[in-house]
Length: 296
Image (tube, rainbow, N blue to C red; front, side, top):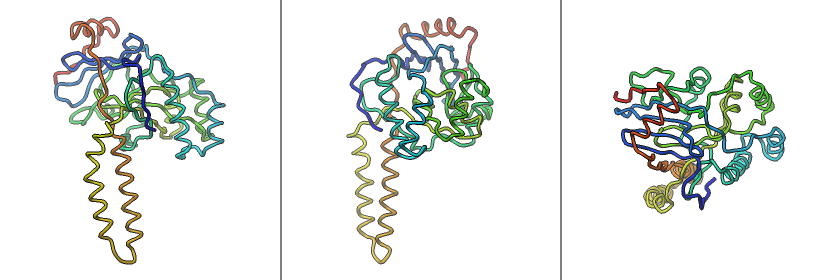
């Protein structure tokens, strides 16, 4: 789903940055995640403060069952209904990430999530940790594709057990995540317990990914060449298989266009007030003792 957002100019949940590859995710004026990119650009160190609160209201089982009654779970219609719900809820949220501009809230079209990395979230999700981007000499467990903004609950926690029942019934709602380019990773906006429940049941979560949309005019310029090439290729098809081959070419083009259209734009970051010195002081206040080795 693509949506136009008229405001606010500065959201309640936003990235802020300072020199020296210093990043902080702020919600309602309170830091919820600090991060420091490595100088080699191989990854980043992060520290959660434990102050994050989902901008969405808790999802009730009745709503999950109602949506499942109208649309087969996992189907395009089911996904569209949850995307519409999530978009409306985020628009109404005071401490959500939406600000003026074009946005996508849709399934991952770039195949970002590697199946082998999902189990690592339950086994290795420290409040102070490291995300590797390329894996060169880094611990295998640091290769994760999704960063929770709060510690994941125990798989036997009451709320998680309720979601595990929904998973077994086939009605569990998706996880809402947000792509942040400065982290080179999505973060969990809403659905930490649904994520835990799915993984505890040996499944893979359905994820709706929020991201800023690329400018439409820029997309049109970049796709023009591909469209012309497609038209020439289809026009040259002949023989009894031309119709089937044309249909195949059209499907391939549609997949490529969808993936290209959903390519996230850069996440906007606002300057951190006070710069590096103030960022360092905020780290000392909110995550004392955290001293990431970012110079390698």
